[in-house]
Image (cartoon, rainbow over the protein chains, first blue to last red):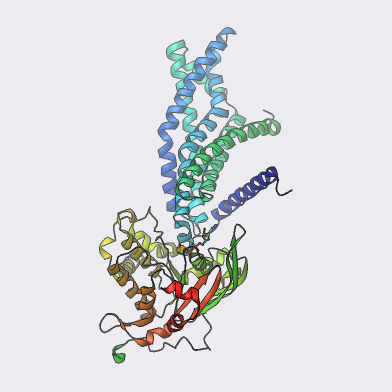
Length: 259
Length: 279
Ligand SMILES: Nc1ncnc2c1ncn2[C@@H]1O[C@H](COP(=O)(O)OP(=O)(O)OP(=O)(O)O)[C@@H](O)[C@H]1O
Ligand SMILES: [Mg+2]
């Protein structure tokens, strides 16, 4: 039984899942335990939040513009081109804003966390930290988790607004839609459920991105080469998990909130 | 010269059987990936004594130090340090115990995102018990102890290997630990820097009565420890026969202790491997 490569693989995956869940539990329980690392949280918020701002603004803007471009030509066939703003804003707020900003944060920060923690691990800095009486999970993982959750929330709002603005710019310049009509249809289209969904997702995705990044960093093996590998894997895994959990959350919202 | 030797007057000789050992390993076993690394290691170190750990590369010396700190857990066997059973304490309580233990890692393991000042102050900053002025004072004292006060504002990347090693000694010393674990503190260093570091270690042993485990590949360092004591009057380590009482040797081979005792016995040992190792 033991010799089967498949059973070994399954065992490894289950072990990895268990380690991940354990990391999640510890990182969260540390939020409520002293000492609390305010400075480290602020520092991480700065790197994650302000560092990611330019790319989130640009991605949001162009995604909104391209949505307006594609949707308006389809809507024109049904004679409903004036609903462009409505569709752009709904798809951005519900799906694209949270997913895109999380993917950008995954690309920039999950990799950064994996490589930073990974190199600290292989150069024994994490052992040194434990030896000096400080829990690396508390000092390193929990601040990254909190900062990513908080900043991804705000980055998503920025992405949403920039996207709608991008859609507006395209609609106004290329299609010649009336600007008051665009903005009012964009805002009145959104209801409470859209906002709940659109603002819960970035928090959950933030948790995924931060923990996946830290997890791969803490699992890095085999010197600097291993750190490089862990970095790449963390981005791939974080992006996949964001997109897959997006489906699950959207489905759950429809089931439980009926929309 | 014995009269100018300034050992702490209360220093009891390490042979004193009434005092419990500060570090004690009992039948410690550990394997990595099914390969036995330590196979029943037992030894003890008394208050104020230094045990020199010898052995070939990858014989498990570094791992032994990590076991003493609870950074690695044994598969079986028991380990006591400063009266606490490290091998069964939960991690949360180990953090408390580790405040009494300093360690100098083989590759220094300085935090490269922090300056020398922040590295050395790390433990004090974490404890949040002292104000900034007190922390600054202590950092400067620790750095001047290793003669590196001028490097206080540098980043670890800008230091040489020997300087990193000395900063890491200062970092371990800041909280005045009762136990020090040195992992090859002179590895890859020039003879002059090595001597400076060995003198520091002798000073800590004789002035502060620090109990220590010291891993080294350089036998001359081990003999320096066994033959020199700190002379406060001259402010340097000087030859002193008393030093042998505070220094013992342990030789590891294939996971087992093949020698544990005084330096003179090590030299006189009939064991063939000991001979090959020493020559
Ligand atoms: N976490 C670990 N996982 C797997 N193997 C390990 C681990 N830590 C140590 N080892 C293995 O244990 C062996 C002993 O390592 P250790 O670092 O204790 O040796 P050492 O005596 O300090 O060697 P050196 O004199 O070269 O520093 C090595 O072969 C190493 O590969
Ligand atoms: Mg070693």
